[in-house]
Image (cartoon, rainbow, N blue to C red; front, side):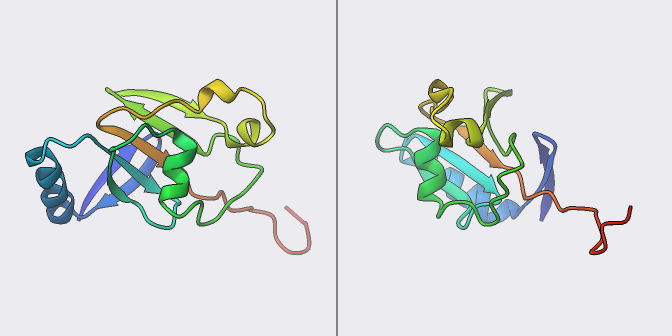
Length: 124
């Protein structure tokens, strides 16, 4: 296992399985993207048809632990730059242009749910 840090999220990657899948896609010259983090089926996916961020999340089985108070839950890393996707805004029909089309070798990162640090009695 190899630990990577993308968009402030430490991600454990099985180097051998990731490398094998990456090589298979490269050999086939197929465009691809990755989706990691808090989704049901993280991994490497073929980009065989136009796909937007929302479609990628749905293709990966959706959010595993959705937390509506976590606004910056999704990012796209493209050529080393981060593109934020505010799920709450998108769900409310605002800022729809942030649901960009994915490009070859994009990385979609879904941050895990933030845990509350308040105890059950509400005392700090």
